[in-house]
Length: 345
Image (cartoon, rainbow, N blue to C red):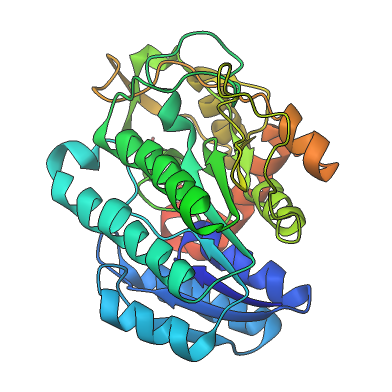
């Protein structure tokens, strides 16, 4: 199939492009290579993918540029769109909220309009476990209400789900939203804890552990995310014939629209997570314990049973195994940071 991947130079996007090309799809990548973090990492991801599977089409386009995006769709006519581009980060949304409006709302509207004007067989887009917000009952189910987001980032992701539903209802666009739970692995983002922690430990610098390391996260290895996406591509949603307007199912619809959690389903305390990173690095961390940060969800745990039912797959890579693979990549990509420090006399 001809597949457009937005955010193709991003963490999930690069892995997704690699898998799709290996599966025999014709892939067109799109990225704006913005400076939210060092663009060199994005370029290096692209070089890595091309080294593995050869060249692929990659265009530098900003989602907020509606005319450029429309021209791309008119020329390329993708059958499937995997929309992974977004302004990420919970804490950054407190500092620069307008970036989230431009990318996550206006940019997503432009994607929806292009899928309307140039009909696609399936739009798959990234949502986030952050939408569960103030919910305390775990595991989080796609049947749960998500009306209390704790950050603007989370609010924009819930808005994406609602926008997709309206376009699915009005224009028949098959839309699947994926709520990712704390994705980690090789080529990850430097603003996320695996790289931040590994760098701090390797360099003997203090690292900040919020909520005193007592909150839990449902870590999901990148390969499990990509396997889920690959299996969903040809499973475009259809209208749910049992959908009841009086008792509406939050995860399906009378429109061709679905939601899925993708999470490891085994939440781990941050202290345990840090101990595993220390083990794989062979070094101890210098830890600064701090309160929970504004916008952070206390605990996360995914109920991915709907995903398993729809695809026959659910995340399976254990955190210890996944962090071992991540640290092997980290030592290769950041050789100076990961070089063992000399013992002090």
